[in-house]
Length: 143
Image 1 (spheres, rainbow, N blue to C red):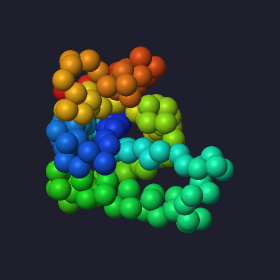
Image 2: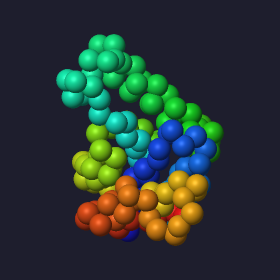
Image 3: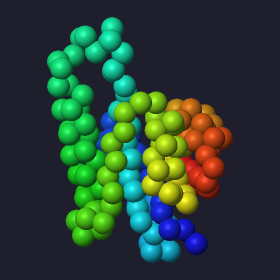
């Protein structure tokens, strides 16, 4: 039985991750599981990089990402369903943050997209492949 599902989306993909989100919601609903949705922002914290940004850039980026993540969930699920979702915005390396979030949330299943559709091969994208390879829980890959 699944108690918690973590869905990883890239908000920079716009609506391209909508099918991933919808499948994650269906899988969570099968067992009445908690649905968590995570997106990961790159880390600009290194001193030589962060010097190019305003001091409050990171906080603004987190707020904007949270708004976009919530809007993606509301647009593809309904507002009532969205109220029950835990929206997580992490900062760092995508696959590492997805795995950390899954562990801290107690997720039993991770749902992730295979890659951006403009790739012409049938291989997993690098983040999905790393999540599959390093995860201690089941991973459902949406193509």
